[in-house]
Amino acid sequence: MSAIWRHFKDPPRPDAVGILAVDVYFPTQQVLMSDQEAADGCPGKYTQGLGQEGMSFCNDREDVVSMALTVTHSLMEKYGVRPEEVGHVQVGTESGVDRSKSIKSHLMKLFSQQQTETQLKEQQGRSSCSING
Image (cartoon, rainbow, N blue to C red; front, side, top):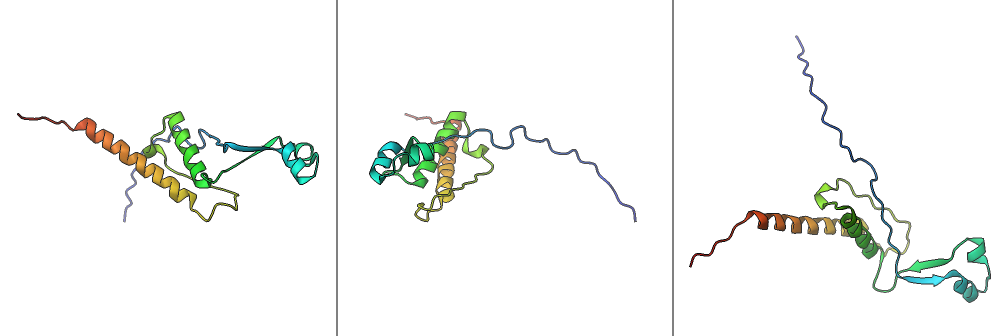
C-alpha cells in the first residue's frame, strides 16, 4: 500500500498578533489621599507609606461593566478597529465589587451591536432606491 504525500503551503502568518494597543479609563470621582489620611486619622499612611496621591472610584451611575464598555469602545475608535477584526477578547478583574456581572457577556453585546450597525451601513451602500412617479 503506497502513501500519497501532498505538500500544502502553510497559510500566511498574520502580521498583527499579540497585544497591539492598551487603553486605560479612570472614573471621574477622586479623593485625595491626604484628605483620606485626615479622615482616617493616619497621617502619611497613604501618601508616604504607599506613595499614593489620589484614588478614583465609581459613582452610583458607573460600575465595572460601564467602565469596560467605555474603554473598549474608546480603544476601538482610537485605533480604527472594526468589531469583525477582533479575534479574541479576554477580560480579567480583581474587583470583588463587580456585583456578579459577567463583564465579557456585556462587552460582547458591544461587538454584536457594532457589527449590526456596520452590516446595515454596508447594505445601505450597496442598495439602490428608485421612485417611479
